[in-house]
Length: 114
Image (cartoon, rainbow, N blue to C red; front, side):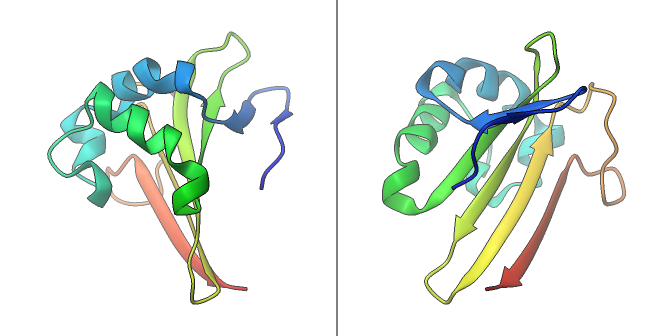
């Protein structure tokens, strides 16, 4: 999958178990979870832990997006579907200095054929 990398402004690497509390912190708010089908009515710690632990089994991979000071500001997901399409999405902290791709949404998605 995607190898970890850093730029001057961001660090991106696959989510690990230790990231679950921070992921819940930026995701378990209506401004984020309302846009995410898998979050349904929220994203408590147990859901974050399950999502991270099951990445290899589900072929749904999630990555931490961090600032240079290690603050988690978002996550991105890459889902490898059996029909040979790949879905890519991102969501983030609505308080962070970010731009969203749709009217007020802190989440964006696209699906591509391989």
